[in-house]
Image 1: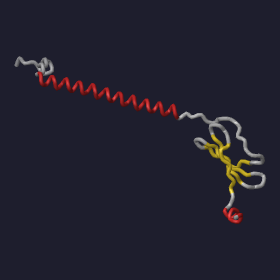
Image 2: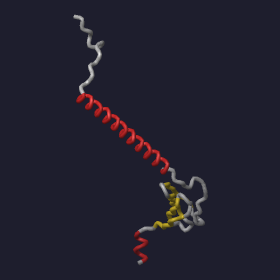
Image 3: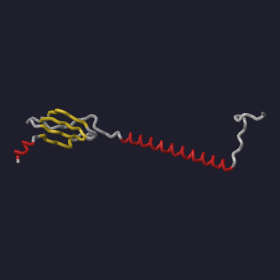
Image 4: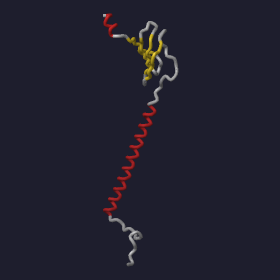
Length: 121
């Protein structure tokens, strides 16, 4: 009855085989935590890098030069282009495409019907 409770009793030293296993487990835990931190920092670095690349320069203010007599009916904005659809003085419809970075016209298309194109041939 003179025995101390388990909580108060000192732990007996581990035998050499158990101590080797404990050291291996501590080393494995340290390596695992290190690899986890490297992975987390790599993911965070990739996110920051992608956010930095997403800001591409684009035309935010400026003038778009359209042909004389062109009246804009609708416009559309894409990642790298500005599209304007409108009519000219003779009544035909045209689509103009502008580069968003420079503001220069890169495309000019006339909208016509297939019946009109077939009669021309």
